[in-house]
Length: 174
Image 1 (tube, rainbow, N blue to C red):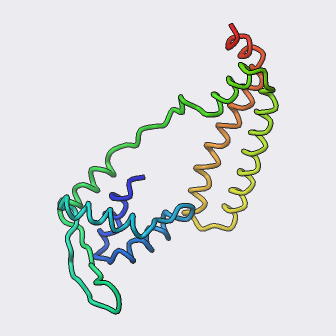
Image 2 (tube, rainbow, N blue to C red):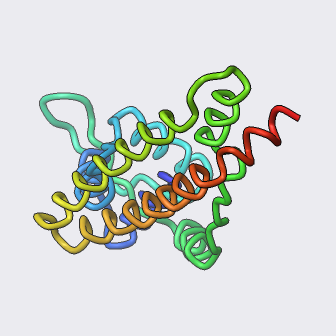
């Protein structure tokens, strides 16, 4: 995820302080991975340097000065271009799971046990996400659906690999 573009997009609704940007980000996108304040301010500094935001005001308070950031026309254009650009599909051609299966076979370990253990972990996480989805709002439901669909694809791969384990074993030992 592009943190900079996300913060720029949040600024399109109006100027905000770094604290407000962090809170808005965390509420919308950071359920599982909230931003650190340092990340917000370093990103805002970079966006300011690149002319994508400007300081809209500075407020003095009991602590450090609080800058209010506003998106510039260049920032709006940058967000529009980013949103219009499709994300590159991730083909997962360098799978850690595949690597572990092959190494288990090469070293004489039980690859079937490895696949069973991984399947159990996937199912555990799927149950957890399904429970979270039931109690979540629409955004949480969609995020959980995305993760569940990926986990389902992984489970299909695990089943296919288990079915082809003898064939794979012969191929990697040849």
